[in-house]
Structures are given as C-alpha cells and as structure tokens.
Length: 192
Image 1: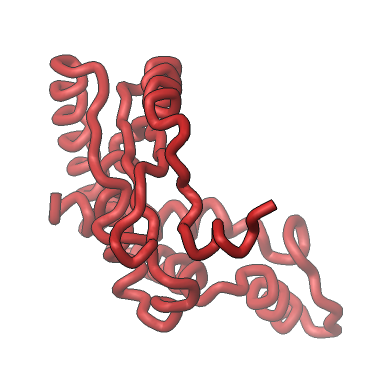
Image 2: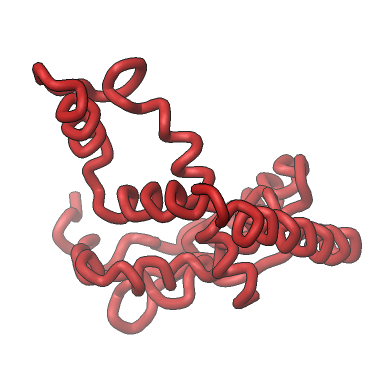
C-alpha cells in the first residue's frame, strides 16, 4: 500500500500536468489582459490555477515528465498500477464489494490543515489504491465520533459494476434511515 500511495502521487502529478496543459489562457481557461505573451501565459495560469496544492502537483508532474525522468518515474508507476489492478481484481472476484474507512481520521475542522500540505496528502491514503486501479467507489456517512466530527465508509466495486455499489449503498441508507448525520451542534442551531 505504501508503494501504491507514493506512485499515485507520481501518476496524479503526471496526469495533472498533461491534462491541464491546454489551459493556457489562449485556447482554454481564464485569460488576463496583457501586452506581453509571457505575462499573458503566466498570469492566466496563475489566476486560473489558484490553489497552491494544484499548482504544486502540476509543477511536480511537469518536472517528472521532462527528459530523463519519464522511464524512471512514469513507466515504473504504470507497472505498479497494473499490479494494483490485478490484486483488486482477485479480491473482487472473491467478494461482491470491499468496504473500508473513507479517511484515516475524522473530518478536519474547517481550515485546520490548510497550511499543512503533507497532512492533506496523507488524508488521501484510504482512496489512492482504488483511484490507481480505476475502480468505482461510493462513500456514505456512517456516524460521528465523540467530538461531533463525521466519519464515512467507502464501498469499492469491480470495474464497471457501479450498479451493485448503488444497490448496496441504498440498502445501507435504508438500514440507517432515521439516524441523523447532522452534527448535534449544528442540528440544534437549525431546528424548525
């Protein structure tokens, strides 16, 4: 899992860089007014890709896709992706769905991890393998912990088997019907 976690970020960075390269402010995306071509590109991209975390992923991907790094990173990441896909295929041949926590911890308080990109990346650890394998996932709320923050459960299905996930999700929702998934503190403020 640790290997897949690292390689997910390599692949996500490559794919972000490649897929978002067309948003240059000329053909697609936000365009600022400028007389200089270099400031038009730079300003449009800076304005259009506002979040630091997104910019960081794009820059890492662009660097890693540069000459000399493609085989060392991208090719190896694709090989590991194939291994991850095969291991999930075996597990999903034996089981209808897989269930796991949606995150390694309860939800963060708003703004709590804003300046900690490593904590934000670590929050993805429960989802990266399924993303690498290209599998459908359905996340549902399943309760609260003692401090009132929500927790979720994720169900993972075989490729192109979303119907089964939705059926199981519906059963879970029906089973939990009547359970409140609004934190008590907020529910008290909005009573009608």
